[in-house]
Image (tube, rainbow, N blue to C red; front, side, top):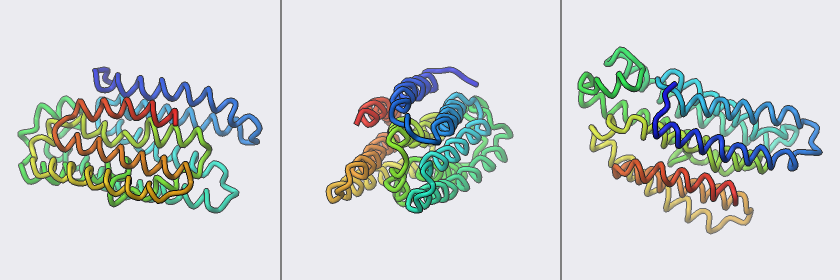
Length: 264
């Protein structure tokens, strides 16, 4: 594990907002027969998320990445007797797999050139990665981030993911899981900066997502879907900041968004 400014900010967001959501869930889920199971999933989610943000290498980060994917599947489909809710969970799971496959290939490529998955080693040996490979690694990682952080074209799972209990929506879609793509790009920001093309792609996709999702939100009648599209739109702003090289601004927006969206 590594503790630095970036992982500490994310850890405080995950544990701080997570604590408030746990507190709220005690009352919200009181009469549910799956009460203990709900909290088991919730705590497993927090554990996986903390693994993701505190990891000092890509392998441990990937384990946390898959862990939050699994827990989101379990939590979105928590009331699985309703077919629509279990379909929403499957949709979230499968869309995440698409992004994860790209992310996995990027990890293999980095290991091929650098011979290590430690962040320090990767950032110290960026010269070992050829210029065209930097572009492809960045693109594959960005595809992984679009799956997890709901950007065009992989954003369609997030509005359906509102099928879970309200506290799940607050935890997964406001505070923690959808920001892991932003965290990943910020963590490896020196590598992304080396490829201006990939920065442009990130900024354009982010801007498009912000506009498209906000436009869709205008026509929604269900209040939770409005919040879901609003989340997608805010994530678009974060990716626009990342693509512009404003990594600090993106992480700052992660922090503000986590609190105001969880409150909503």
